[in-house]
Image 1 (cartoon, rainbow, N blue to C red):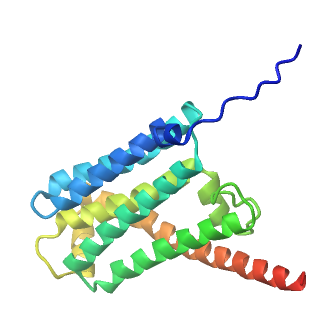
Image 2: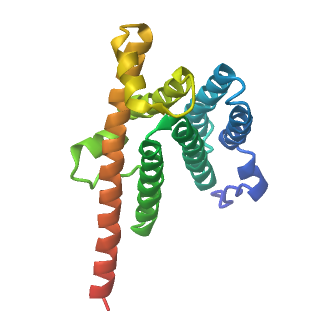
Length: 228
């Protein structure tokens, strides 16, 4: 006789205790401690912050390896990413002038990802990374190629950390510091240049993402009214 028994559903607590989700909790703790000591120990802050960022890739690998992907984990991952980046951008806005540069990047990062997440679930997509129906090649390349996506994301975080580490005092001029660093011709100059390129591409993609998601919301509203 065929076995009609269905697979047991995971309990609510077991989802909270998925390996990738536990890594997510560790990331939060690392970031909390890192930001608590960011001005008293810059190098330790940078190490802990970057370790938390690396854990972002590890939890994704664990989710696929152990078949523990979950909606809660995806949301936890995105919220952790956005909050940690937002906190670092706020700190940079206090270190450099004009502070509006970093506050604008913060607003763009949150707005584009929130709109993308909302519009994806609005049209019934399982993931905000599902952009196969997009007509923009750069947007599709970003979410379709892990290496390219990884480069852009790592470049942003490395640039932000580098800018924080090389700041010697508060209220420094951002452009002066960047230009001076690039002119040094040192390994740090190369790192900043490569990171600056990737970060710039990431901001362009954020703008495309925000516009694409906004169009999806407007299209949903239009079609909804036509059905009435």
